[in-house]
Length: 450
Ligand code: NDP
Image 1 (cartoon, rainbow, N blue to C red):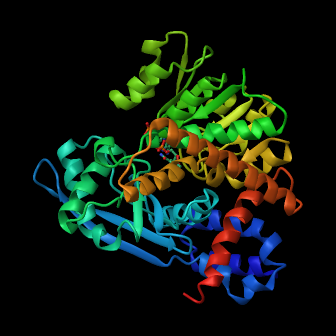
Image 2: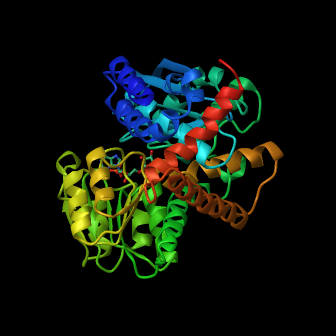
């Protein structure tokens, strides 16, 4: 058995109760075989065995009091996966289904994503099984303060810098930053995604969606094609989806779909961005209300768990941009995308596409870019927020946006060239995994057995 297969077997046995983590590790290790199975330096240093094991896993109790005076208890996580190239960096996710497997898969992906940005950031991720839906602002604050009352001792501007993810936006970051500052009595960039009045970066809100489109444009151009007039199939309707739709319009493309946990919208005239922002950012309402704004659009109620073959992917389009959550796109969905003429596919969400669906896309000539490359714009801009905090200075929107674009175009160039170098032209999974890995692995070797 090859070195990479050997390690994969070990990981699968050791983490049998963590399916998402095994899925993420399988994808990465399979594409690393080109590098690690032919170069003894990685095996001699047991780099794979080390890179799949988090440096530290923290699990803690989060007690808080609800509006009825009842004590509630959630479980908090922080996985500090790898600090070879910089302080741990990665978001916090508050969602009822959060568990160790999901946080480990996200933290593992983050190592390679952060490396691809070219910025000095290690990989980490955290969160809680806390569900914000239906909670008052006071309850959210009580939860966030309790969460930080434990987390503060493990993080810091030069140690570990969390950010937002699903369920953690500006409001939650604000409450956690306030509590950190109060306990530690230091004003430092310990969290990113902060509000603009207290150290946040301009363009951070837009960064993941905009970055996704900058990378997609670089991909499309590399094939001698253009974004102008392209129909985009978008899933999700949160932070990533909204700003992906905004930038797609700015590039002359036409996004026609979006979705939430209850259903999806097809608007043949193109998604009404102002209406979408009002529904999701202002009213925090369901997508089912979209047709109040646009009577000609279609809304389809679908239980997400039964969505395969029924959702946004039934609509014909040139570019697929999944922006909701992990494993949201299955084989039946991509069959429809391909049958509808889909040509490009870049992931805004983390691991949204199942392994057999990825294989189908690649086998059918779709140019597929995995999330760790395509959605790196969010963490890249978080890295820029850290730089601005350290300098005690702030760049303009245009400056940050220009740096973001540069980073995304460079990521595409890097994964494209790496894929070619290893004889895997157009295989951007291989390109992204190898390019992200080599930098981290070489840093680990240089730093000795730690
Ligand atoms: P949000 O919480 O803002 O939005 C998520 C969207 O996806 C919402 O429309 C939500 O629906 C929908 N969704 C979530 N879970 C499910 C589910 N199980 N079934 C169907 N729809 C679902 O999150 P973001 O936009 O920030 O994140 C989306 C994805 O992008 C995640 O995978 C995240 O990890 C990834 N990502 C985010 C980055 C960022 O900067 N925000 C950076 C890099 C990656 P509803 O409105 O009903 O909740």
